[in-house]
Image (cartoon, rainbow, N blue to C red; front, side, top):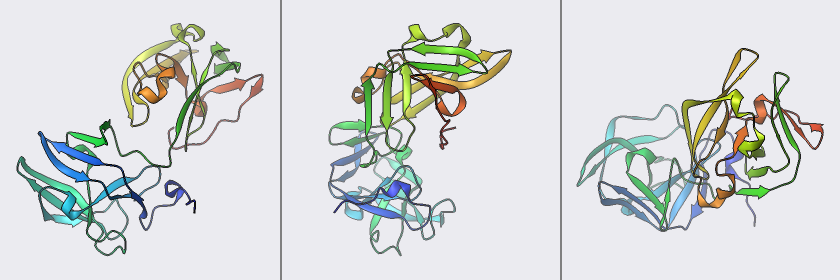
Length: 253
């Protein structure tokens, strides 16, 4: 039976889905997590965390002094993790009263040096089994305007469709008014796409900060967007094939 995507559920009781990938987490060269039967858990919307059986974690779990977690659903408790490489304070959590999560623990993603699904490294946070990302070449005519000024005009976009996000139109730099854009120090990371660098636009003496971005070397799954520029649909006037689009509402901007 097909299940609803837990990432659409509101904050509250954690939503749980079994996972069967081989997940490993490494810290200072040691394997801290080694699991082939774990749980995806949506504590908050948008993405899940991995929760592992206690015996899939290499180290001693010690109840943290300030064990109650204020920013997660009720019932979460924090633990320190003592490994052969040293103490990792406050990095583990569990829900002892949850009927499906008893005996399962999550390890903060940033607490370890590397995470792997099978032999593929994972970055930023665990990837949802419900998220799909497709980068498709298109011949749609895309025009981007900002405060009445045309900043891009292309008939060769690559459209990126990502579950839970608006369709994004990546445009060749030759079709973008690069003279209006300036790189900023802002960088973003996505477990599905890679590391992004952002641009601000100077239009009519007004700076629109971090209005566009590019992935110089994206993940292999979305390599077609490499080096292309994308603008936030939420913040520009986007016309596709002559039809002005309604600005989407999202948590991204």
